[in-house]
Image 1 (cartoon, rainbow, N blue to C red):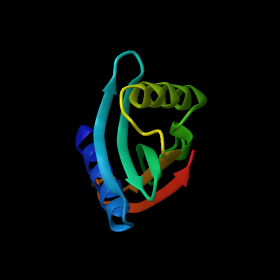
Image 2: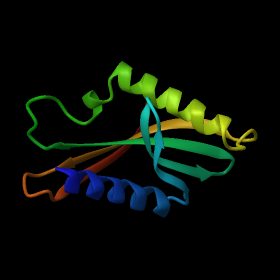
Image 3: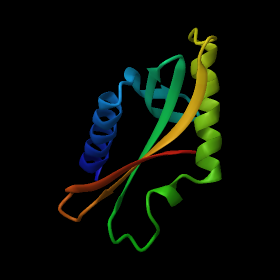
Image 4: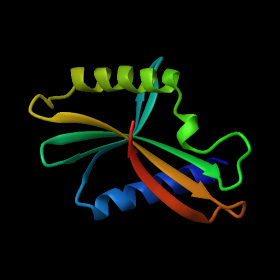
Amino acid sequence: MERIGHAAEDAVLSSLLSRGMHLVARTFLVPRYGEIDLIMTCKNRLYIIEVKSRLQCDCYGGAREAITPQKRLRIHRATSFFLANHRWDDFDVVFLAGLVTHERNERIIRIEIVPI
């Protein structure tokens, strides 16, 4: 399962790079709050991206449902830690989710980038 997670991050990263974004950090670990999957910039905006992948026929809900209020809170706390230790004062912060849907054979069939 870890392999599809990395493939999903790679796919979202590639999609965002093709839109003109620039990678700042990947898998930014914050003790007690987890990690930020991708941190990117574009035009004075700092993008915090959470990547989630799910099977196309997942009975437990799609990738969007995996970003719970608790997960959002951890992302915000991790972002506060990142901002406190880096200089991004002139940047607006935007939170996005990279939602990846894949088949059982791990072939990615859809990537959505949505605000969270």
